[in-house]
Length: 329
Ligand SMILES: [Zn+2]
Image (cartoon, rainbow, N blue to C red; front, side, top):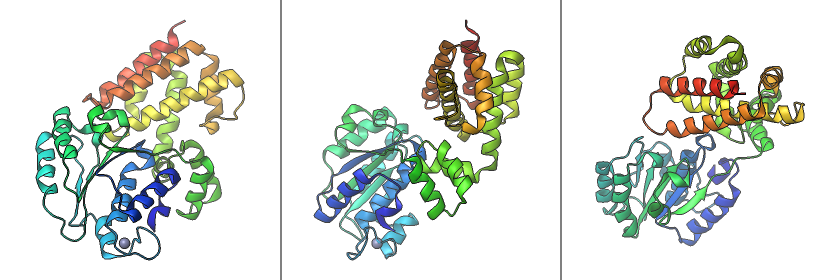
């Protein structure tokens, strides 16, 4: 148990353990990183570390009452806000609650799991609490990126940026912690981008593999089949709302591979090495500029997912824009 169950992030773990043991914790932290790096899990382990009262062995111990209560989200001194859009009213309730003394321990912790979804009004309301927090109050804001929060919030939090783990690190964790066999673990580690949750999804979600292959072949055939047939193939993928980000990410890493392959003409360094044939075919039918433009289009769509745009329109725009980008020149 303890912080050792968190993969990588040694730069943060050491510092936080020092703060916990020296009782020099700050009042607010901004824990940020790609969801595949599990920043929400990191926040929970950090909260456990603060509330755990077992003083021998690892911090957190993982087996005392406090640790168990944090794990099951039932700790009296821990409030978790899961709302994807956190409104002023929610922040007001937090503000009211944080001034009530802790029940079991010396600290009271609040985790805001979707920091990027806090409305500007909500953030401004939170500022007040961040300016005058009670001595025992600690707020952990989890977000995709630091920039997702207003600069005034950023400057009042200690930033804790999660970093991707090495491919080797993911590979060993898949084998030793999750019990996967060598070949599977190797493959998942390769496409994970250093993110354990991405690797696990690849291994646990059977449809993921199909979606990945069908999506890439859609891109490969796009020019030849034309836009109407491509949009039909897209429909056939039946992509759900919570899979949009994954599709965008897969698309990005795929076109990055195409660009790399065009430059080097060899499979080394490809993320989707098993798809070399598809990558090669697409690469030979389009220009570098077309691929670069496609990457830009995907980035644009990634910022759209945060706004309230429907799944269907994001994906259709994606396919239309990439089709356009690849057809130019
Ligand atoms: Zn404990």
